[in-house]
Image (tube, rainbow, N blue to C red; front, side):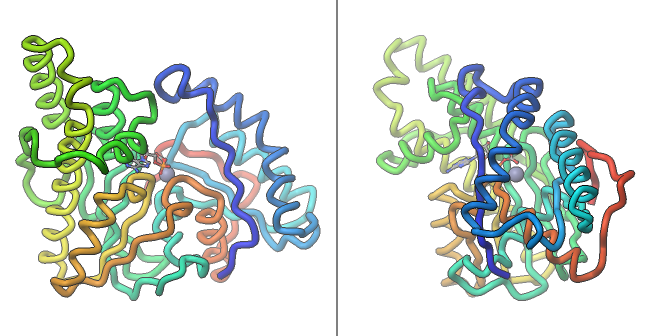
Length: 314
Ligand code: KG4
Ligand code: ZN
């Protein structure tokens, strides 16, 4: 399945407030949805009547933003008389692996997908595009949230994850160590690590008020290592439990360089690892299109009474 255009409108407004303000996010969606669709059609060089179906994210996510997308898609579906397809955001992240432009082979079923974003941290057992099961999840913060909150503590603006990752490339990951969570089975927890970082920083800053500035690069590298180690240990545990050796990653945090490297290194231990291209890791339109195509092939269409669901389940 090929992608003809993949336009994403990032909302700069959230940087100003140090996080996503739901009300501002929905307003921005409202303003940007028409221009971004025009841009996508122009980039693809197609007209509205060449479209076969309209896929839209139903959830999980922020209600206001979802409502803008769902209402717009419903109206477009009625106006063009084309089928409407509702997509689960988390499944779409996983199905991004089946975009042909990925420049690498698509995962063979069954595979395990580590889905790590700003809102979710999951290990998913994927038997087919239509049969996915969550076998591990976070009991508190999501991995992306852990990156963003830790970044904030050392003075990096929201969303801090990508910038912390960039700075960490030059640092020593073994310079500082933080406490590790002890959570049974395949679930994750990041709140203990967050507290450990906070308390350590507080002590170090008490002794030297310039501590963070002086050690920023090594702090970034050490924090990144702590989070990545947690993710890797759980995916290895999941593989042992299920006997599945094919591993994929999805979601915004899969753009993380250290995570990508650690996973790739697992290939020498007999794992088959699938890491998507950067542009298909963080939220994007192509992943929704690909999830829509799988539903289209099954004739799995939505009706006009479909409603956005911020807590959409699997
Ligand atoms: O999937 P996504 O684009 O949006 C959600 O659905 O949440 O994920 C965004 C999250 C943010 O927390 C962001 O800081 C994190 O992914 N992220 C990263 C990197 N790129 C994005 N975290 C660590 N390293 C990165 N390179
Ligand atoms: Zn996402």
